[in-house]
Image (cartoon, rainbow, N blue to C red; front, side):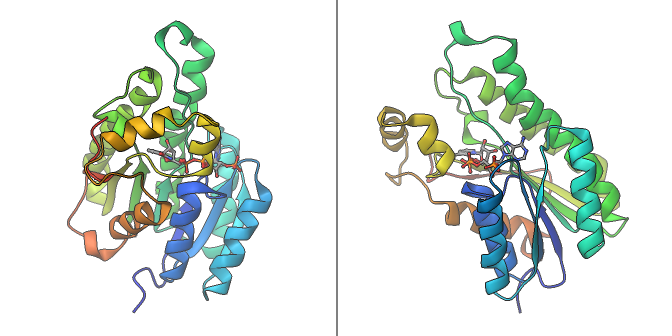
Length: 250
Ligand SMILES: NC(=O)c1ccc[n+]([C@@H]2O[C@H](COP(=O)([O-])OP(=O)(O)OC[C@H]3O[C@@H](n4cnc5c(N)ncnc54)[C@H](OP(=O)(O)O)[C@@H]3O)[C@@H](O)[C@H]2O)c1
């Protein structure tokens, strides 16, 4: 039996990268999936197509999940299509690695407004759409929260905040049978990672030297862990942070 049969999942930032792989994995396991995206409509529609081809249902919904009005619209569309939400994956996030001399309010807000405030506002809205029937919330954090690399103070701080929010909300939402966990990828080969590094392979090489399993991760490997946290296999797990990074210590 498929692990998410009868469930409805909302995955933010699912037009590409880790979010797309999680959405596809959840669809393949029977979930009806709401594929959120910010700008890449074609990418999101391609993910929807793959989920439908695998025999489940999906819709693509545009929305900037750092904006309250867009978040409300995302869940209104989810409700219209599928009713109650059972699973939320807070995946949408930005990373902009900069040394201290380049830190300024714009750099700070770009990352904190989406990675932290957006995650909180999205969770607030999702919980209302779980309607007392419990659920699983998965916050995509990063290994950088616990072992921050040099030159990434703001990004690493957003993900440390995500882990703390995870622990706090697991306490707050546990009585409502909502589990809240973080998933912390190590360096994972995605469109975002490739475009942030350009031709410069030095960060990737640095990460590989710090990874006992000796390579970067794939989006499918992260999606398998997300499936575990979404499904009944992890029914006794909440408030935890699951590292998925080949043992990396940045
Ligand atoms: N890749 C890694 O090595 C790595 C490691 C640790 C943690 N992570 C975390 O994993 C998550 C995904 O990373 P990724 O590498 O897969 O990123 P990616 O390839 O850059 O994809 C980012 C996704 O987020 C969406 N997005 C961006 N801003 C958004 C917004 N304001 N509202 C809604 N969606 C938005 C993008 O949508 P559009 O394309 O439509 O704009 C896209 O679907 C992030 O939280 C990141 O911090 C990544």
